[in-house]
Length: 215
Image 1 (cartoon, one colour):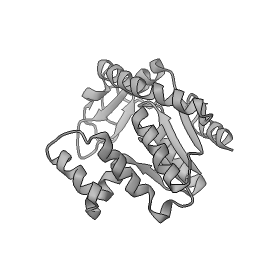
Image 2 (tube, helix red, strand yellow; image 1 turned 90 degrees about the horizontal axis):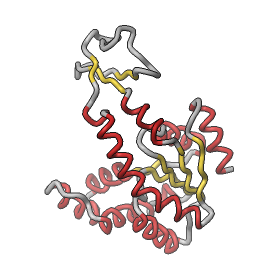
Image 3 (cartoon, one colour; image 1 turned 45 degrees about the vertical axis):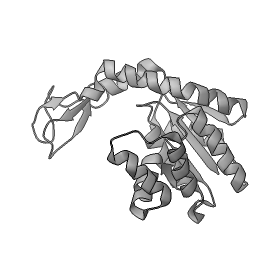
Image 4 (tube, helix red, strand yellow; image 1 turned 180 degrees about the vertical axis):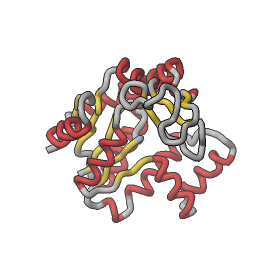
């Protein structure tokens, strides 16, 4: 089974991804993991990636796709895998189809963990982090509040809101995600591969919906 997992920041996609790979016994593949492995192994595409990263530049699509193609050719993926964070754009989705076609394979499901934007803003903007870097405990003003407002339960240090957790930044991130992902949703829907799963409720309940969607 070859699965693509889609979901906005704060959707709980990462938690569901871990549960899914444990249940199915297939590897989880993220672009970050692929890049690190390619760099470590010194593959041709890994070395290309390094030239852009060393300059602090974004890795272009053709190189990202090349690194993914190298990874998908490895024998540990013969029984399937779950892609997390790739494809991010329509161009990447079409390139992935060509890679799989050359391998005589295809995507089984594109699972979307669907959470309304306002709920994502509420989830992300409520996060608070311990200012003590040696501790780094995390809380949430609604879902996991500290016993004393603004104070870490673990070490007594001040809690703060990270810059990327403020509402303005979150809405900007969601705007980018929605612009990139909307075409992907339409693309996989047209291929009858999209499995839209409601991402609200207890974690186990959401996972049950995913299991049912891909059964």
